Image (cartoon, rainbow, N blue to C red; front, side, top):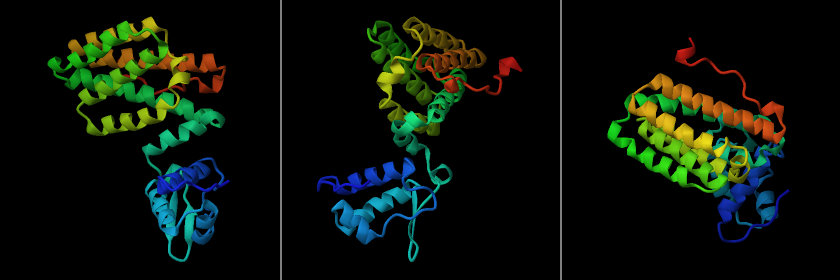
Length: 248
């Protein structure tokens, strides 16, 4: 389960190994990690580096360090933060629910951002989106277009006026990067992506938050449906969401 680490990036490598084992269920919630003396010997590191790594794991909400109780694994679904998504995704092959939840988050997040941009963004700030849409029109590969589509939504988050939303999408983006080749092949048809950008821009210029929310929701729901069909995994099909204002 554990292997010796190299001297460079010692604490980081220890953190990566233990984090992977915890997220993969090798150390389940409530269990204890081996004592520091044993861990440091098995990893081939000094105890100072090991303690630094354990502090990082505690900061991530993966363990709790208590004098007299050792290092106990936490239920990270109760104690962890959004940053764990980027570490969970590489393990998602055996957990399709996580991929479905990520696509659902993208849909919820995207439609809310779209409405905020239409409502709040100054018209002269929309040029940032026009530049990305122009680059998307010129993109020649599915991977490049997928990256630009994500860039479009990151820029939207920046224009939404909500700093926390921007930080959230930045965090999720790092997790998605490892799945870029896979997800790019499951994305909507290229012309649909480009048309989506232009339709959103029209809604933003018109300050039509209802239309913007509907455009984003339709597009992101379609993306989730296509991903489920292409992967042959009906369990990835999007679940019903609360209706948008226009549906009420």
